Length: 432
Ligand code: ZN
Image 1 (cartoon, rainbow, N blue to C red):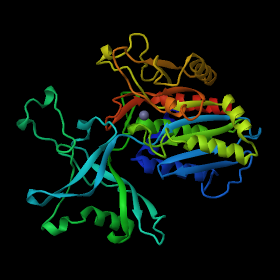
Image 2 (cartoon, rainbow, N blue to C red):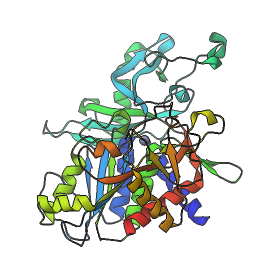
Image 3 (tube, rainbow, N blue to C red):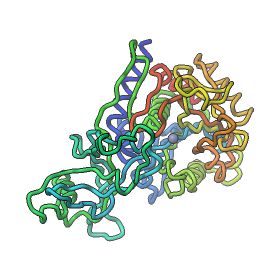
Image 4 (cartoon, rainbow, N blue to C red):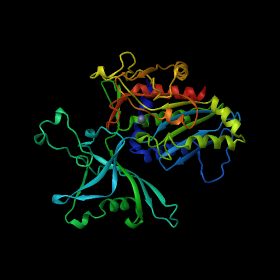
């Protein structure tokens, strides 16, 4: 029981520190730094030592950490992958829009596939990356920024103006989802309002700011819910709960039989098609580079890949008691039932009978329950990292996740117990 509470508290702290992808990577980096991992500059020559702990950051929004095997260049890899991004509202350039009464709203666009109406009437704030001028135009400076206090909200239309709102309410991303941020006394105050706020926070001039990747987030912290704290509710459980579990497993295991890798990609929610996404060669090149640094060549790399295994960790849909008809009649994971193996006949997941069996054996060894998710055959379902990665690297692996409710809502819910189960399974995998 104590394990469950400890894991949940640690996860909630991690979630609150990680409101968007850039902050998630910053939080992971802090833990890696505190645990003796050395950051590697991709532009420099790497000098890796067997047993050494290292990490590489891509675009400030993806991070790849590893502990080098002591068994040589062809020993292979144990990989856990997850993603740093979650659906949200991203601020457009020239975002300020002056409205009647001096009200300023911000122009935003939708990132990924959020459940839009869950974003209304919340105390929202801003976080992300700001790019600043430097002496070298090809290498501007980057600052990671998080406003802690609420700065914005998206007020809903009153029910009196749309009596049918509870019968289904279609939303325009451009009209309905724009947050209000201020009331100004005269029109000129609106100009550069956001940039001035950001410059104040960073202690720089507006002119220093070249561009930004800033998004909105819900400032409501993660919390436990239920008569016996059975549930954990927060934004971004998909997929930061898996990032947190992977990170804990990497930090708290010691095996060097194979190189242990934690691969946290960005942009899964938009199809992974960026240089820091799972469809890019970033992981394949990292693995090749590790082998090369250990004195191996193509032969050692290929032998190693054949011995390797990946857990592609991305959350799954938990059985919802209000909608039993949406689920497969015999394979619907329950919150609290342990890690979920995801299977799809049309190979949207990388899981097959062999890799599912391997993950089941890992859970058995860890002493945790595990369960299966298969889509109701009339429901299309989603995709994830695993099979996208196998287009770059012909790895064996399993797609799995924690069972959550309300995937892509501004707040998702899971069972408190499941997180401790997942961490145990991941540790067992790394320590096999
Ligand atoms: Zn996900």
